[in-house]
Image (cartoon, helix red, strand yellow):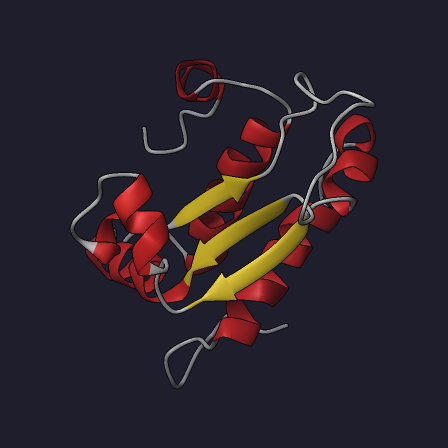
Length: 134
């Protein structure tokens, strides 16, 4: 997929970039990553923003929705698949603000950050490992 866009990247473009990021993961993480659905929406739904106490939908670029592997139990009866949500408009807004960061790099960062929650890593652990903004 070309990453030169003549029009604003679509939800399908963002999904393709996330799938490329998933496909590039090292072997120890690849199988677990394939078990997590990827969903691209324009913005986070209102109920999600409310639950997170976020007023501005542009502040949320992605979210992991599921039970981290470190907390899963055979007793769990999930009502939906583990999902990484990517919010297109918020991602594009950040991409524009960070002129020097290519869109594939930004989408990969958001996707991997949310996938790290699937692995049970805290935000602090992720920040210690993923210092992409430096």
